[in-house]
Image (cartoon, rainbow, N blue to C red; front, side, top):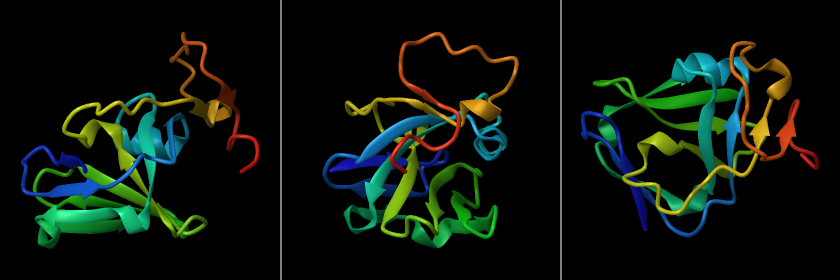
Length: 134
């Protein structure tokens, strides 16, 4: 099982298996949610995710009519995101994992709206919106 926690360690989660996807998202929502140039996320089937402790300390914020984030009400760390277009998946911020656990982003998405001051310097694929096939 792969595990993670919030900054104050009041909330812990775990998931089994490999993530089905991992990426850097440059959309304006992820930039504001993380306070940085992009969000780094992995996609996990909902059936593989579970709260290990502190579920009572999780609050939900509905960002848009399709997207919500679940966060620690004590330290404010985003613990996961849910998107109504993909209800069978949970999106976990890579920074909350207990270690990198071999999970690495494979591409950049929403580069068409990335921060103008940020330059991408790696050779991973870049998609202006959703990756092809989505």
